[in-house]
Amino acid sequence: MAKIPLPERGQPLDVTYVYQMANSINDLASAISPSTYKYVTVDAGSAGKQSVRTSEARIIGGYISINSNTTVNAAEEKDFSYDFSTDFKYAPIVVATVVNAGGTDAGRDMSVIIKPPSTNKVEGSIRFNKGGIVTAGVNLIIIGIPN
Image (cartoon, rainbow, N blue to C red; front, side, top):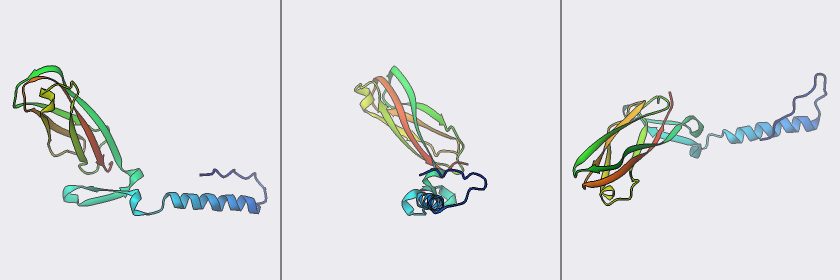
């Protein structure tokens, strides 16, 4: 968007200057239009669906290293927690995927389970369904409305 130059004191306002102001105001109005694709809707559980402008939502991409070249047994679980860098107004939507960082056979048979998130933390565990040496992590995508 164009930046309007400030007028000097006593400067007469000419057509060019008024045109620049009107053009910038129109650009601003277009940028903040209430079209539906510029909103994020988060289902906040008991608070219902909450919609805010995309610019007002908070999206966090996180990674947690669970273990590195560690021998695990089948059916073993390893807990994790991830603190959000900001508190959310409602519990956010959290998506977690397990990462087989070591590329081992035992790492190919893991699952991730998360507990219901709070407004400032998510906790969960990785379940190792096959024994062996594993290097694992968890990718997190957290989408919510900041406090």
